Image (cartoon, rainbow, N blue to C red; front, side, top):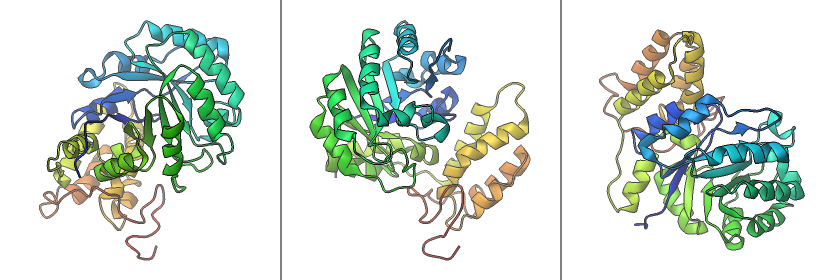
Length: 344
């Protein structure tokens, strides 16, 4: 199957999509555009310097959207106006974060319970006259009761791009995605729609775009596991054979990620702990038994961590094996349940 040229985006992920990770992905094939981690908006809030760096030093000069999370109208307007002077592609409103500590404050995914508040926020953000106003949303909070009404509000607003994660907030990341809801958004909204949620492989991206009619595909966790996925999608679009990374390439990615996340004065144990957050996803394609995940989660030092990585990625009998494009069946984060039908 050969597809035309359509865009991809790296999904915003808190504590993940900082500039270092954007650059690591960019070195393996950038998406068409990026989104920052969310900017918390409240009284006297300021844009985090690390987020500013991801705006100014964007990889490959790709467009970067600045994502906002909040519900105070005056403060949202203030920060959106500040962003207008920065080199951002647009301002994105977070209507999807599923973290309880977030939605309990009636921000992020919590706003999906209050369509009229969403209307007010979009009207205020439009006042700031951003270069492009976008929304990243889920299909509802605990069900889809407000989904169509929220889409109607967005359709009447000045929103120019919508990314739809095909789950509810309460569905988190493990529930079955409903791509029919994404297709419904395509039919209702006058603006481009990006599909997000469980796009595991480049072939999934092409299939889901064809099935739903979306403008493009946004990928989050699968880009942590496979940072070559945007390159691979572009190769499929062109009808080319896709790049198949080897386990040695995966080890190089892990080394690059560690170096990129390292900062002056950061304790080794803290950096190792942060790396584990990424390796929880990377490990889903390392071995089908979950042994790498089990061992990696017990590492305390850089030496211990990379000894384990060497064992599973660069031993002579492993280094030239193809890295699995799909996560192994049955491996979940953070617990390993079963492998290819085997027992736990």
